[in-house]
Image (tube, helix red, strand yellow):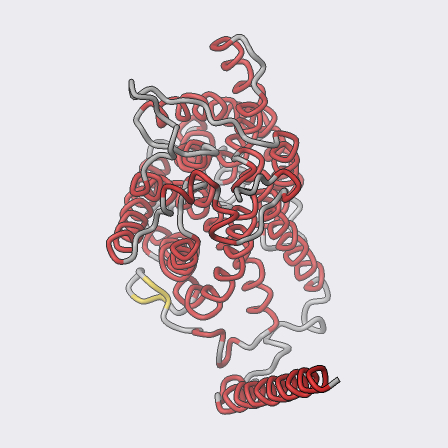
Amino acid sequence: MGPANDFTNTVTKEVVSMFKRTLSLAGLAAALILALPSFAFAADPNGAETLAADPTLAITFIWMLVAAFLVFFMQAGFAMVEAGMCRAKNATNLMMKNLLDFVMGSLAYFVIGFALMYGADKAGIIGTSGWFMLGDNYDVTVYRDFMFQVVFAATAATIVSGAIAERLKFSAYLVYSVVISAIIYPIYGHWVWGGGWLSQMATPFHDFAGSGVVHALGGFVGLAGAMVLGPRFGKYGKDGKPRAIPGHNIPLAALGVFILWFGWFGFNAGSTLNGNDLRIAVIAVNTNMAAAAGSAIALMIVKLKTGNFDIGMALNGALAGLVAVTAPCAVIGGGSAILIGAVAGALVVTAIYTVENMGVDDPVGAFSVHGVNGIWGLIAVGLFADGTYGDVTGLFFGGGSAQLVSQLIGAAVVALWAFGLGYITFKVMDITFGIRVAPHEEIRGLDIDEHGSPAYPNFLIVEE
């Protein structure tokens, strides 16, 4: 009985000590919060806009928040696509990366990113107010806008995880998630959506829902990461030719694409930022038709090339169409949406084979889907915008070349900015502490050594 009593006493003391430490930390956190005057809710939490002044305001609040929730659900779609198209031994690692994208991205965007993107403009380059969402920004309208924007920031960050899957250290991924959410994404976003220089051009650059701001940016950062990391073991033979590394769960990947397709209706139609804007019907139809056309064309091209109806290319074709229509979705008609999606389907197939043959290992085709077709979506605005919404008119509808030139400038800028900053970020981390896991860890799978938690423990072979 003596040893048992001693053990009980020891455990009790440890629990009491832990409880005291927890209380101390909670007290310290509360003191810090109260010590910050802006955290004391200096501004009216009801904001300048009220239902009394505008009874329809509630519709916009509900619409934007529901759209934000749909975009958040896209995180699940990305997680399913990436896990399904990669190997079982890395499934836990990919779930963790998609989770931490939103965790680290939310925190970084709250502290720094939102202010850089939407704060008071400084020379058309960055925002300079609203750090930590403090001061007069404690306002229901600003909080609504933050919720809508943070899910877009997280989407840009999570695109990259597919391009660098199955060989990146988890610690390096955490650092990258902060950098893209706090700096890379919001600064370019300020240039386009926050009143920065691209929106100030004589013919303003137009990216309605983020073909460039979100997708091309994430795609080019992903390309930079894949290039710094190098290909996975076994991806290329001794002759230098690429080998297929099949994903472990195609049904999971297909589910992910369906989730993304569903969430995209919030992504695009929600970008009206107005629940009373009936253009949401046009945007929803355009979004759907581009995805359908992209999938159909990708499927037909691969059938002609290989003789097979390839599910992976059909899925990526749908995503390519969605990416491409994201910038022009509000300024085009349904026929143009189908054509834009069809071109996207052809581009994604061509890009996947081209990138692979160049020695760049992108396990899920993230750059081909998001980078290449993000650029195509921006260019498509300058070609197909029909002048029926927002005074944006492209070359094919009598608008001349002015809008197309602006779109080409914005597209070049996002490619250079995202790839350049992404390459620097991954290269500095690689030089500083190394970003690739050890060879034996990559061969065994990142789930074991990085997380100690395999996704499928019943199939795990343990060496004794």
